[in-house]
Length: 241
Image (tube, rainbow, N blue to C red; front, side):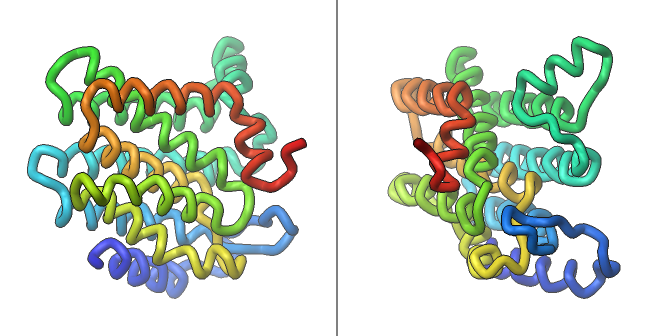
């Protein structure tokens, strides 16, 4: 599969050229892991979309994936020491005149989702719903990225139904499968770059395979997941009470 091969190749290259100590982070257990999987999965998912997507969906998939990965990567670097989490915290900082990396990520991925939705759908309502689904799926996958393998596993689970409607979902699934072993072994993590890129790519596949009823159902579920984001993350890390 193209996306898996590109992801593994990019991951190996990044690890060879990365200076020691750069692009690393402490994971939930305090172990030092690298963030190379994030950019590698972003490139892999985009490359897979170039091959798998129909011409009309190709641009939407590549745009949403690359922008989500870039915005997430910026937050990985610029927001590494920022304890603020969630939309409210970053929007509150914006009201106080501070543009946080989280706000850049929020607006950048939302804008990319709307543009991608506009490329995939014809009617205004469908375009708007598509934007919500793409950005919302990116956010959902990031919400569950709280333990090794969670984001990649959710990407695979979300992508399976899409395979019945076309090959587009195979791109993020291949990239997720390629990084999953390292993620589970705690040799690396997807970070915001990889989680958002994989989520956005799956979101495009969902949009491409659904009409308005499906878009409404997915959008409603994703909005609910955003509202209850803390509980979603707690469930993903097995600490929901």
